[in-house]
Image 1: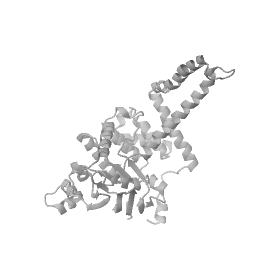
Image 2: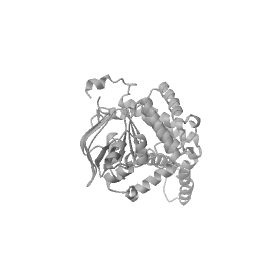
Image 3: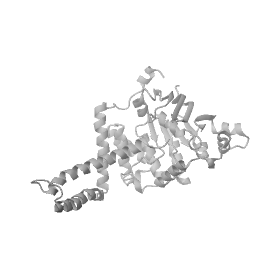
Image 4: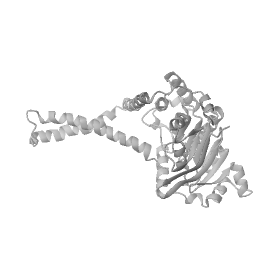
Length: 108
Length: 265
């Protein structure tokens, strides 16, 4: 096929630029995940179990033990931002691994 | 008229294993072409190279006139792909799954909504459009996946083992929809299968692959006639691959097929 014939083929719609595509595609995937939570809100609870355990079990135990010096700050206050950051980070890592698994390890 | 798909000496090696060995093949526009072969013959590797998910080790291929290495984006816009494994999301409804596909292909929203309704109607899923996909049967999921792959009206559709794990009634329904799609859209369809009845039923031409090479090519009827007067496509298959259908497949293949079947069934 010559390049002339190719150019003559009508494009159904304009393709956005690479940067716009990135934002649109990322939003599409993120919105699909939010939609899943709308369908099944109990997911929110299961996802909250781990950080709650961290705060209640480890937080309470170590706060009582005073094993880690946190100065003026209470141990729970010291721990909370870390637990939040860890939850966000782990969710992102696991989701990323799932995506890589999906795209790259399927069979031939 | 240029070929819809053309490969020249297309080769892919994994370590010491040559999965696809100097494959030269042409698929005509508008035809339903079946790629047959036992497990491990290189069918899926061939498809993965054609849809730009896997770079060839050597050789070249064009899809819809575009080179699979140099024009990847253009190839991807021209094709639809239904993988062997589950690709719809069970935690979302059929309509939402279609919406994701449409948005990832950047179909403008008004157009997208119209196409989604029409695709649901065409695939016989309009009544269950807002039900979660995990409540669907295997055949319904396959039809939804085909609808997702066709939403951007590709010129060429790739179906990798479209009816694996489906019961006979669901298989017939999938075949029927594939045929109607071809008749209505004029889409070129390349499918892989190891069900000989499926190939005989759907395909105008078939190519039989064995150990990465194309060992036979022709219409199902002409291939059968070459092998013997009363030969079926099953006999053709056995003749060219030198193995009974039952012998094919490693533990991994079996595990994979069962997994697919369980997810769909």
